[in-house]
Image 1: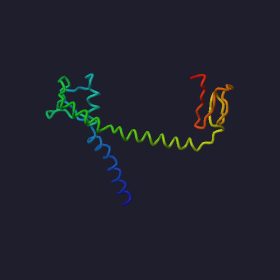
Image 2: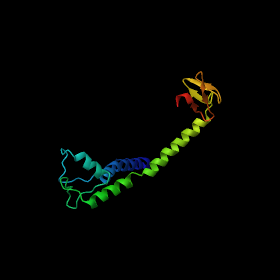
Image 3: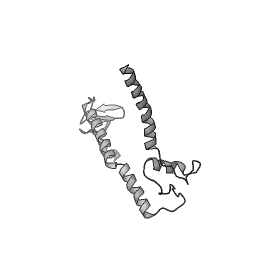
Image 4: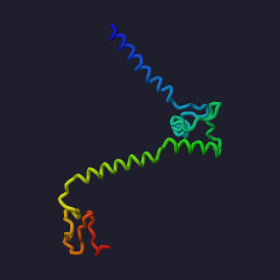
Length: 144
């Protein structure tokens, strides 16, 4: 009986969580923005992202010019939502991890040029002018 009661309570709570979440996360609606307006999706997306909240009277006033104060608030909100530094660091960490994996691979040569591997110091591609260097570069002075 106790297990059934716990299961029933858990089921009710699990059923209420999405409803409560939807109520909390629902974008604010505006009395002067209709779902058939050309700007509806943009305004509601900004509202959902909490970048705009409209006026105290429940309007958005889409035909009114934006003030410098409103533009400043919007820009500040955008810059706080998008953390460019963390995006860069995440990308850099992925690059370093990939580079570390590449460095563990065993290649049959130092340089790869025109579907063939070459060792450091080898002439490359049948041309005595092209050389393979230790860092993997192939330099052909005649092509420079």
